[in-house]
Length: 133
Image (cartoon, helix red, strand yellow):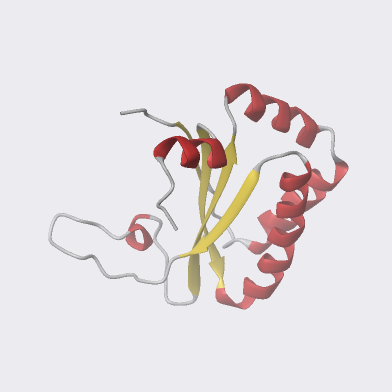
């Protein structure tokens, strides 16, 4: 089987990605998993890919590098999660965003999400466009 080309990868994930980084108390792990399953179903319905990752290493690999766990001030009772949402392009991102605003489930899931993350914290969010080289 051949390795996919850059063009094939671009077509599969699109040219826009939103990322969210946040802390979750370990005791809320299963509840957050269930919530994210519901959210992923909504994102798929609207044509966006939604991936969730949990940080598995809190060590910095070398001097001059800071592990993200330190940046977000995670402690031993917390997990650091990252979500990635991929859109075909900026227009698609705007269309999905408009649909989400009109979907009652999204408001409810957001409120539940805010109750599950570490109290007194927020998400770190960023929206990025693919750089073609």
